[in-house]
Amino acid sequence: MMSANHMNLHIGPFQCDVIDTNGATLCIPTGPVEVLEKYFKSPYPSELEIEYAIAYIEDCVMPLDKIISDQRQILNVSAQLPDINLEEIIPRGQMLDLDKFERIFNSALRRSGSKEVIATLLIIRECFHHLRFTTLMGS
Image (cartoon, rainbow, N blue to C red; front, side):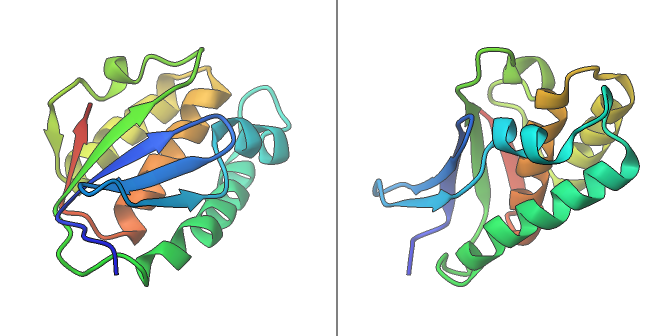
């Protein structure tokens, strides 16, 4: 069982890693580039494309729920993506509960023209929802 009081979500182009404070790492076998290449066929993702992407991301994230312990509090998020400055969306050190993140997510969906930003936020959102953390923090 992985210790999960405070964990890091590192987003790479084709895979993401959830890392606990002891350095133990779990792989989420997808990343924003894979999601947008597989599911976002139109210039701006349709609601149906987003729903298919969500279902796929959930399938990738849900197995980790059984491995991470129940004491889940803070999930730090970082990304190594050339076309995204995640700090513009989730400022470093900013603490967000699920409602605040959902507002940021919905706002970004309305105004972002970047499929990579949308795919990245979908991965963060599904990790936040399904791994049941109470707080998200930009790092």
